[in-house]
Image (cartoon, rainbow, N blue to C red; front, side, top):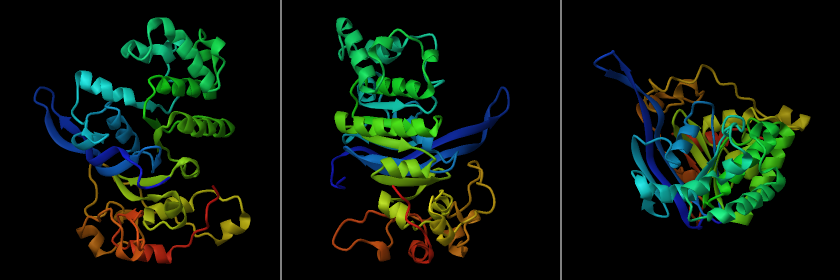
Length: 350
């Protein structure tokens, strides 16, 4: 999609720290879990922005802050140019109508005591102006039909559906208020591979039909490439590389991105032999005690003294700028140009 499309969500300096305390009567803060520690990105109208990274990197925390399930410690979230970070009451209710979420686990995100009709129609109880009471059953049945479920099953309970069908119910619930943005937090990770493809195709169709913008969070890089226009790679609470799907997957410049991509399975035996496999040493540092300078330096084979002293900025190296147009590939690495020249990658199939 065109990079000049209108921004619908703008995130700047987003931070979420969870305080660590001790003591019984007098609670004293002893530190903080830095789950998200300065995230910036723009989601444009009709675009899918994929966020990838290891478990614990802060992806889901970002998602929860966007839908106001978590309150940011610092930073700004703008929807249609308006700062919505500190909204409450009716103002927050109006914004939430336009930014909905599809959760990871279809087995725990649906109330087992409610029928499918009640689950999908529940948003209408909060926003009655969207659907009058006499029209709600028809609207719910229409939504079930749109996501590929039998409208006559409106009175069934979640346990009577398969995992893939339950996720379709969750998607129908997310669409009930006709939002502009869907935040999908690993929506297919709990599903079988064959069902994943069906749900991914459904999301793709719904994006065109409802003119949706997606923030798609996943740890499976193959799935993210299939759906995303742009990709942001997160590590230890920060975005370390961002660009178009082609730039990220075919020309990664950050060592962490290169390591992730080197682990993606390749069906062609010849391609597997030609590809460089990067094995990272050590464990991910604790978010309570992050390394100085570059957070990835403790596991990076290219780390130098500068990496411990200076925090790399998510920016486009001069050598990688696109002449005559806006740069689309940012990398938070002091030696991004060198990393791009020295890496060996086999183009991944879409």
